[in-house]
Length: 370
Image (cartoon, rainbow, N blue to C red; front, side, top):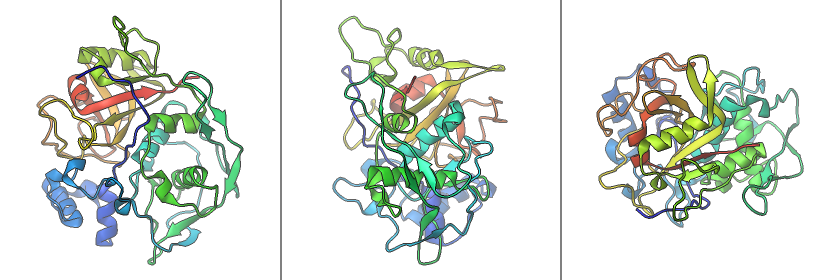
């Protein structure tokens, strides 16, 4: 593949676990299901063979079709009211494991929000009382300059509920907290016209690194290949995987933006990664997306690294495939890492992916910096 410079991305995959619950009208205890049961449930709810769900080229309902926003369709004629499942905004711990994407293909934003909560939780303010105030940042005139703070605005805790009084969008795994739902609503409001009843279709796809910048006001720069230049030694913060000759160089580049946390290496800056959309890009030969661990046209939070040469990430869906079948042997790490008991489980959506597999399946990665 030729050298490549990253441009603003259009990334978005819906959470199939959330879609299945809404279509079935039930709360599904996914973590108590055997792998094959989980796959059958998803295939039945989304009316497509499981192994075809995760690749956009299969016309999967997880992805927005070109020129067709039906897969993104927000709740029709919603009732705007406090979410009956919880209305407490406390952000006492700003848990990075809390965000769970809902029935919108806005993984780019939820992955970015998770990364901020993980690396720099102080940037997520507490909101003790109504109304809730937010500040987002516009891109600067050119890369490397400080983003521009938009005027602060406020929203209420009214959320769009369907005809059964159910909330469909992103949520927190901590019962009663709505800080993720409110951030998502605020972002939709900011991207639109700053209404307290925003159009969520405005945030159906996007660029996870730009979302990091929108959230934090931090900078980013793109690696621009020139003859004789080397991404390993560059000072950029956004990279295409095709520009790295060796997978170990990708690992080393991500590791260079990490810090020690006890025996572990965790990201020192909010960081994300994103996969190919095979409809418009060509992944390396033989690469297809066939399970809920590595998904096409999807964004992930990057949390750190673990030796030897594994990159630790989190899926904003809040879980992954408990027994992925589409990845090569040795692709996934096992054992304890930071606040995760065992990377081999899928209950918290955190996993370690071998750098060589990351290089093949992921299109790019990056972070923001002061």
